[in-house]
Every structure is written in C-alpha cells, then in structure tokens.
Image (cartoon, rainbow, N blue to C red; front, side, top):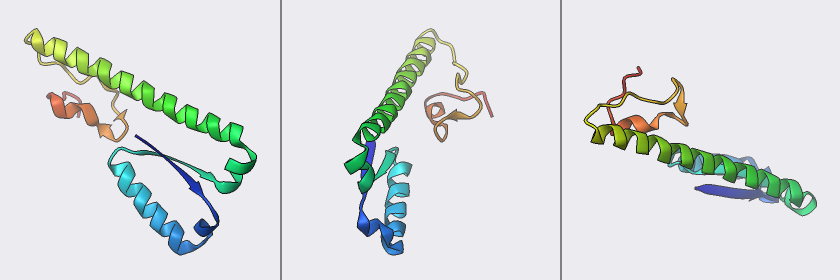
Length: 108
C-alpha cells in the first residue's frame, strides 16, 4: 500500500508535525509505504511529484514480484518433500526476514 501526503501550512506547527510522525510510523509498521510532498511542490513542480510517485510504485511492484517468486520457490520445494532454506539475503527484504514465517529459516 502507498500513502501520499501533501503537507500544507498546518504542518509548520510542531504539534501537527509530531501527530503526523506518529501516524506515519503506525501505518509504516502495518506495511504502508509513505511519500510526502509539500503543498508548494504540488503547485509548482508537479512533474517531479509524479516522477516520485511513479518511482515508489515501481519499487512496490518489484517487491511484490520478488515475494510471489520466492513464495512459488518455497511451495515448489515443499511439494517435492524438501525443507527449503531461506533464499533471502542476510539483511532480508524490508524489516528482517518477512518470508521466513512460512518456513524454517536456516539463516540466523
């Protein structure tokens, strides 16, 4: 999921900024990707705003394709009676080894 936020004049106040930060962290913990723009950017530089949104969407699509591919590998190996090792890099994708909840991970 993607959240696009346009920060206007109300975001110049510390209270609004703290509230936004808290809300953003909560949503990011649920897997929502955030991208922010200022109101001025949307009024004066829409082409770069659109490029930024397109870039994030492409990143999300790549992650989805990687997830689908890894899931198919895992299921294929399980169907053959093997216990597949974790195929993720040591850093994992995103926050740790998100895919390892579905199989025994051999990477510590």
